[in-house]
Image (cartoon, one colour):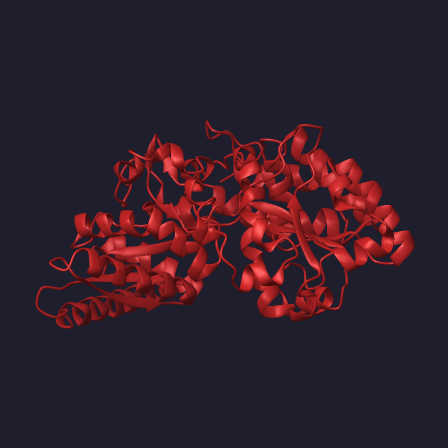
Amino acid sequence: MKKMTACFLVLMMLLTLCIAGCSAERSSGKSGETELTFWTFNGLHEQFYVEMVKEWNKKYPDRKIKLNTVVYPYGQMHDNLSISLIAGEGVPDIADVELARFSNFLKGSDIPLADLTPLIEKDRDKFVEARLTLYSKNGKLYGLDTHVGTTVMFYNMDVMKKAGVDPDDIKTWDDYHKAGQKVRKVTGKPMGTVETNDSGTFLSMISQQNSGYFDKNGKLILNNDTNVKTLQYLKDMINDKTMIAAPGGGHHSEEYYGFMNQGGAASVLMPIWYMGRFIDYMPDLKGKIAIRPLPAWKEGGDRSAGLGGTATVVPKQSKHVELAKEFLAFAKGSKEGNKKLWSVLGFDPLRWDVWSSKELKEKNKYTDYFQNGTGIFSMLLDIKDEINPIYLHEDFAKASDLVNRSVLFDALKSQQKTPKQALDRAAGELKQK
């Protein structure tokens, strides 16, 4: 019965994709236009591509593009993409794939995605390499990210000043810990918050130490000494009240936004794209937040990480593979496109050579909100080479789910298991697949 139900659902989904595909074919663009279908789960990304289609059509008036964007819920979009690739029906020309799901499309030797390596080959040294490695397999690049996700520390300077702590004096995590004790004693507020239903805090801190869930050879390292010690370090800071578990479990909940908007903690570790969350959900902190590099694990150590990510891919089965690749190279590989990633979306672009451009120094809502807003990219240039690659593997999605769903909760929230026990158990489940 379960098999019959599953088959019925798959058939219904295929029928839906078929109808969508036929509809897209019937709604061809104007004479001389080629229609490209774009699937995403983030409506904001559509704004960027709309801008880039305008720029493309200006530059190539004889090769105009009409973009047909379909915005699906997160899970449905990834499931639809997987099914359409298997069925060979209703496949989009370009699609967004979120980092946690990307490894699902790299399984086996017959990768269903087009090789994008040639698109950036000429200017590869101008890209943050760690974000290219992230979406690569066997030396071939299969996705272009929407941002670097340079991870920084956002400090609430009202709280820091009240405690008499200067964030520029914080060089290492031990400095951060000591400063946090002073902040707690003077203000009664925690120094920071730790996500317990999302890997952001933990993954950034282990990435700083060139660790992760898998190494570059695909070996499982989830429960290595570095990861165990880092999880223990977070547990210790929670237990001595330097940090607290993030209200709502993570840094993207309504509960958390309200907590921070009221000055709930002195700092939060997040990627630079989190600036948009401050502007949208924490308006009362405008003018109070300063951005600084992460503390290093030792003097001279790495002060950042690359967190999160959504890569745009071109399925091999696209009806317009070459045009889709050319457009993607124009949108995400060109200097012009990378400047738009900042001006339209507020993201740190993949090409670091635009970080010093005048367009990224112009005043906007992001620069106005933060204390050092106009100097953001000068700081990012200083730490761009301190971002280590995160290596994907066929089981990365499963490892990420285990960390988010059980490891962090068991080790940090409920503390029913030690960090070593929690990581060993998750590693054991991955090995039993």
